[in-house]
Image (cartoon, rainbow, N blue to C red):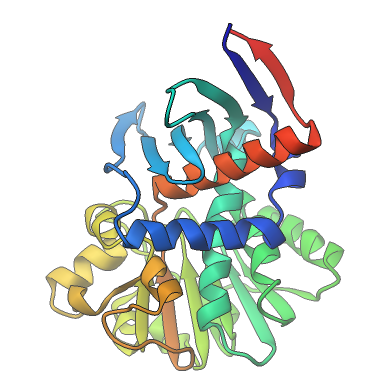
Length: 324
């Protein structure tokens, strides 16, 4: 009989801390940029007006991971997460299924770990305000992981939903930081040293006219070709643009597709996160000025996080094993 380990979201929270996950994600991205992974483009479909993705990858040392994920913005009104997913992990040699785990938490954790990696390499060294654009589920993980590499003096919050901003402010207070709710994107961004965009916007909320360098921008929203979270002015002023995958961003986000097509951004000068980690960017990149990390998410993150979670869970006897 095949035995499969079930790992819950709360168990993933305990297992995949920033201390262990960020390093593993760095390793996975380095392997990805070196061509050592097997990572087909994700399959995307629209169901009832909502985005669904099927993502699969093999990352040596971690296993084969397959994730089914959806983004349903209307779930805010239903009291459900806007992002839901399941991840399955397989042995790359035998093909046997090893684990099934809650994918929404895993997605948030692995996304935050990659963002934190960009913060580690590109954020200003001095303390300063953090701006949060979009105060939903993902933003909490983004902030918590980023704080391992950046010292925040306050957290400015912008969300079109007042109740979301107020709930996030309480979360910030729980971290021992001062929250400041703002009424406009400019009010959050101006003077911030780290900007984290984690919204469902289709129009830019990261505005170049309000940015005051040095500042590092993390953007994980705008995941369709006709959507923008970062305006052209910010792209034009950026000293460096780093992405999780050049291929993926050129297929999926208007934040990169549109300025590349208009000639505002040169694709050959964009650096992948794995290249940044390995010191192999097309042009030398250092922090300072305005730097941007744009992510649409790639399947290596899921396979890496799932493989790491499985190893840790087996070692600590966490999760519930079932026979298929």
